[in-house]
Length: 605
Image (tube, rainbow, N blue to C red; front, side):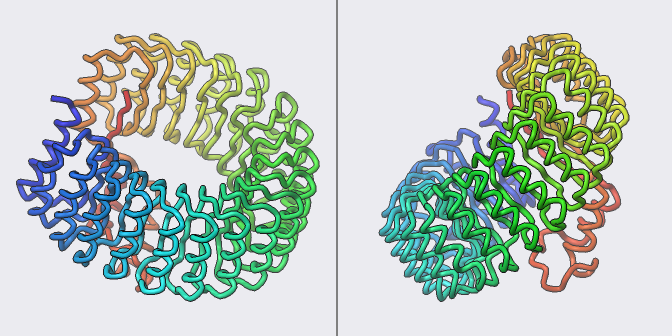
């Protein structure tokens, strides 16, 4: 029997035994429409289950009908995920009927199910009766304008729904208009995702008018909707008066520097927006300059995404000037903008002065030699940056030395992304030497470089000493048996690494088997990617057995322990109206005392 089928049978047996299982995760388990009945039977009888994930199982319409029976009878199920099961309109009909009698479910995932407009309309109608579902994912289902109008009517009647994801459908201006008119008087929906539809400027205009009246929508996503400057103009026009919206996503549209200028001027007076997505438009240098001017005065925006906008050096300089005085922006993405070494020098200047930025994305900017040197120098004095993305910048082996020297002394950087930078064994050695003394870096990404045996060995020597690195990404390199054997030996010593990605290298069966042996002893690695190597059936069986029979134990960071104490339980200091009630007090205290949590292992091979 297939190992995935074995895992399903184990779960079924546990449910049949009446075991207290809150979460049943059987996604990607090859259950199929003929195997779902065996899962449904114990789900009907076990009253302890709260969350069920059956995504990507080929359930089709018959499977949805079976699951609908559970939904109709359950008094405890809180969330159900049926993503990517091709349940189509007939399956949606079954789920809709169950929703009309269910009074417990609050989260329903139905993404990518080929439900089509008719099935989506039926679900919308069911929500006029259902009073508990507050989160609904219907993205990638070919819903169209008729559904938009039906959902608009539902929104006027339903006072429970909070999150509605309609991304990647076929909603056009008419559907957007119906949704907008309904939302104008709605007071419960806080998140609406209309990305990857076709609402255009007309739909964007209606959404803008809605924001003038609506007092609840905090997150509005409209990327990939052919919105151009007129639509941006209408949306920018409401930002000065809207006091609720926190996130506005207009990425990957057709907004030029003119539209960006309108948005920037709105930022001068808006006091609630914290995240703005404008990546993949055409704002260019002039648009970036206007946004930068706004940043010098705006004191609420925290995240700004401007990738793929051709802002080049001049836009980078303007944004860097803004960072020198702005004290609230924590994330900036200016990837793939051709800023070059000159732009990098301006960004480095800002990093040396700014004390607020936490995440900086610079991938695909052709920084080459001098650019990384400027950034590296700034890292030596910067004490706040936590994530730096330098993927795809042609840094080369000679310039990695500067980056490595910087992370020797830097005490804030936690994630360093260096994929696709032609880093060879010499560069890997430089980084390995830095890891031996660095105590803050938790993620190092060297995917798609040219690291071979020597470099892999040096890195593994480092993780035998380093006790802070949590993730090491080495996929798509040239690691063969000696490098993999060194990694296996390191896993026998290291007790902090939890993610190892070494897919698509040149690892043979012997080395893969040694890795499996090491993982059998190691109890901290919970994620392994080994796809694209010479992994035989013998190794696969061993890895699968380890994955099913053992758990990984991950240390809980001190700051998260504190959060558990202060935020998740009212008797431990949390707010009395805190909605999170998943963790029982005894479990909270157990985590605090033990400092570790058990995690299911996920090995891809």
